[in-house]
Length: 593
Image (tube, rainbow, N blue to C red; front, side):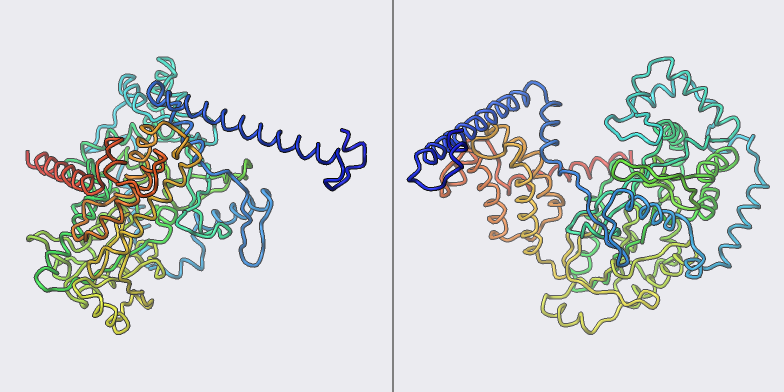
């Protein structure tokens, strides 16, 4: 106050100024020490929570890793959308266009085939009755016990739909809630009518990540939040359909989505083994990795219902699935604001319980269409593996370029008939079985064409989370894996994974649960790593463990690992390979038991 009353003079010749600077220094030092003590107290409490209250522990960790939500300006067509109201209108127009086929877009597809399918749908409707039970699926009234069992399996902490009802309201609603839901669901089955409120979705946008620009609307993915009551009904119907789908071995062998116990690593294992079975004998494998443009958003409803009928679903269940699609609507929810409702004429709403199953039904005859005689695709131990798929991730493989070109043309014809598009910019081609020098040299000579679009040939591609290399090198993959681990570790810095932070054993727990799974994803296929690459990954782990213990930089990795009982990266990779072998053998034994 004295310094202010004297007019805030500057310079060491003024006693008030010197006194002011000393007081400011003492205040800053005290504030810093108090913040440090508070942080240490928080970390101590959190470390105790790790052993006592794991839910509180993970809530804190996820909260500190979550990025702050900010309004990103979207630039589109020379216009900047920098207010919530402007962005809401822009996104509503975008999704309204995306989820309804325009006349200009219709010219890309086979409209004669569209007329044929629509006539078939009319014939199917007239040939069945809503009142008749399906031939293969039990669609009698639900019992209260059946609905309660489904409700007990509902997940928690999921976002609600337009009505604001969450899974927790249903799961913990008690007997009265189960009785009301059973009456509602049985009424829907009896009259084959779903209220419009249950078919209205809430569209939100999620950034795709992977370094995509945040000011472009195509860097965002639309996800539909459906009413929890609607998703519970979908679960009940799916539970009734599952025995029949298992009986007819659906999905088909080359479609690996919607299969219990099958994940992307097993699909990648199939791809790697198929390629190596040819390249180890001196042969080549020509591959095309197809990317379907807006697969969930542009799915054609009449085409889906035609295929639903072809797999044996009829009568009441067919009409119920048709009723789920017709009359659907959406609202856009952006930055806390909600748009007006608009109707849609296609899309299976990415976020629904039956959405993935509907996609598999829609694509179930794709593999037979592109290679009906099985003469172009790849074989592995007399098993056809020419077009392994995981949902909408499709890979075509052939031993000859002519075979791959034929399959690609058939795939394009299939897409024109069933009204979806392969993205020429995201679809890539690869040739396996060549050295790095020859592969690089031949890239400029080879030409891969999808209809009239030239596809780019690449040497590396991230296929369902696992990197493929044309010349079977792992150096680039190892560098990417090491960098990924460092990024994951940096995201945990504010959560206390550092020296003078959380207790060392808690930091090691987070390293093992968060960072290592991200680094070692797909390591079951790592077969050609040299010692330098193993050491590179070991160094990433050693740096982390030394930082946790606040050890000198040149401390031996054996010491830093031994203090926490941590295995080396090489041992962890071998352990994951053994666990993968166990899962594979168990899945084979269950299949033939």
